[in-house]
Image (tube, rainbow, N blue to C red):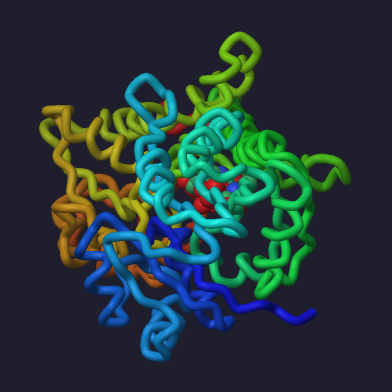
Length: 427
Ligand code: SAJ
């Protein structure tokens, strides 16, 4: 297949827009990356990136220095427009589509016959037909014949974005089959996975259901953890053995679900179908309750000592080895701990540069503490010097919320080891 090189305007240079821009640019398309933040635009034009993602840095540098990728705060006329702006959640758990509306409106005057408009941002079902198409129609062009439109949800995992952009299967939900085919041909320039064609609302719902499926399963794992704690058994053993069944795949419990995807997307379904979304809502609430549950474990462990006790939280990001702190349940946990006058809390995270108040060093954070809480299983935390750690702590207790530490090693080093989901924490 011969790929026709296009000029593509990518609106939104965040976790999805920037890697997508770099990918298209290194496959011979001319890319104008657009962001409302002049800080992001200026650093990109210098070939520098503002997010942490494996392999992204050299790819962006190559794309910028070759002249195929440039950034701007205003969109330019192009053959295709990809909207990859954020869709945050409002306080009432509805989708905030302000950035999608802004991006769509900013390209209306640029549209011409034959252009493609692709929405990658995750949106409530019906957004393309009820919101995007009416805005684009203001161009006076016929949507579906003169301008081709599709929802093409991003499905890549932070930490593996560049790999998954290429390898993952993709869903293209067009307003008609001409839109589906044109958008498929564009993504074929780098996507090696299957590309499935469907309608826009189905594509929107697929994206939301994928993350909802995971969120509901994690809620089930978290509920299992709390039940097993009360039963005095080990949830991790229950999960490991249950997963020996060929049709069972229990997920892992943890201190909650973070990130801009799982913690947000299920609400976009609840928003549209509140009366039918009971399991989805309950799963969200269960996962949102995990920081409070971890706090209750902390209190049990610390109740053995009198006076104000210090805790040290290891990790702030929403998952390991990335710098993303969006919707991180650990921030919620730290806030809960800091509201307790009987507890002081220090924090260490080698990745979370955007979180204020992080100690520069793990052992400094743990100084005079009675409990270290392993909140995120960053690779760095698998090389802790436990003898040194114990020597700086007031009481050698560790609460592992990820099942990522070796109980035997810790016990040999003189620690009391507590694990989320395992047995009764203390008598
Ligand atoms: N988590 C658990 N237990 C588990 C798995 C995850 O507590 O068994 C927690 C993690 O600690 C984290 C959260 O869930 O806080 C989400 O992490 P994740 O790795 O499951 O997913 P995300 O949010 O980084 O990326 C998801 C992915 N969706 C699916 O796997 C269905 C990704 O493919 C999507 O592209 C992305 O959302 C997105 O952008 O929507």
